[in-house]
Image 1 (cartoon, rainbow over the protein chains, first blue to last red):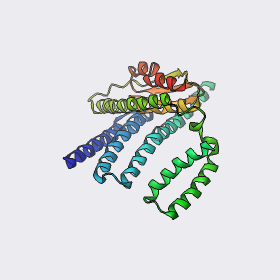
Image 2: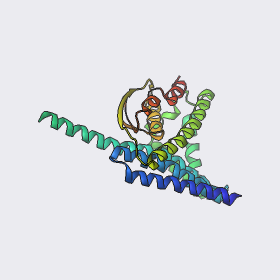
Image 3: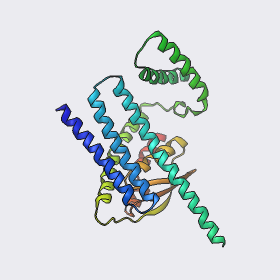
Image 4: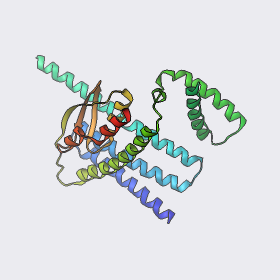
Length: 101
Length: 157
């Protein structure tokens, strides 16, 4: 029973990782690619980590995995935001230069 | 004094989880490192201002967490649907949006949770103006009257 739950969670996580990768390849520009990469990574990683936590039971290593999960949820959107912002600001600048010309 | 005790307690829990055991050496080293960290992060302890930890606020934050998890799961399935569909119907749009939230911490939480929810991505945040990139035009409405902002407004009161 426990093994089956672990397998379901791991497979779900792998499914979302693969969807994220396919999205990364199929979407046309950086912004939409960021959508697929950011979102599918969060749920994929979380499902995999939950499966690992269930595997190791209640001890220090599962608490560590929980910490990894929390920090992942805080840092992932921030990193995505910074990448997208860098491109957005740069794009804006190019537009202005063209406007002056 | 009360403040430093709370921070030290949180840091020590973190330290013990990392150290994996409780002994004299670990405790001494931990207290030393936690004090060190506290001194360096003195200006950043926004969460520990006077009336942050009231019962009502904690209740709202827990509700917020549950809604966030629900929205993330829905978001993932929607993005998966768009990615797997044969002809990708995407209409990327950029929306500007003013929040009514006052504090920087709450604004950051809002921006991060917008990034985590269905087809929306926070591009820029300047004071109260958020620039948001949407994957499809339907999502604009979700952003303009979001559940997150309502709950965060209650937290802020």
